[in-house]
Length: 154
Image 1 (cartoon, rainbow, N blue to C red):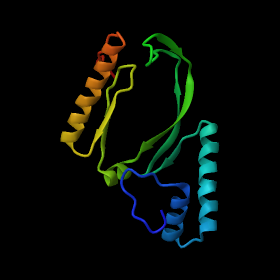
Image 2 (cartoon, rainbow, N blue to C red):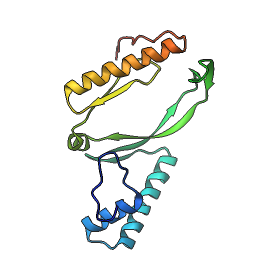
Image 3 (cartoon, one colour):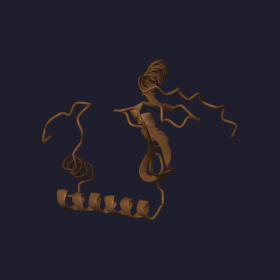
Image 4 (cartoon, one colour):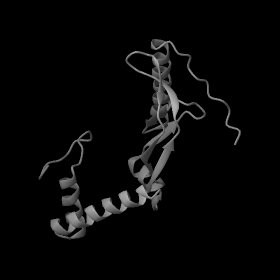
């Protein structure tokens, strides 16, 4: 990474992030490393205690509990039981989304997670159509009936 321009698909390593923090803040790399490590430890500690971390404009780190549910083995198509689990989640804040110019959506009121995103309303529409078509194709391949969203009555 040193002195190179990254393309959009490349991941930023922890070392790259530390260098960026040092450059933007004027801190040494050693101090930037300690700051980043402390932030990560603080986030982990709060999430482990079930607390949300809200960074106004940037986003919210939280813990989501998923109930046990029935699913399908993607290889065999057989029904399986999926155990309850706790997952860390991040929800981007408004200003972060605006900086990325990214629209996101998900199909509500179905048990299967169907998400889509795009940089314009047109690409969002195509992404939605692709996501639904992929879901229907998966159901057809595995011999299951696609769920139909029920109306949101909240």
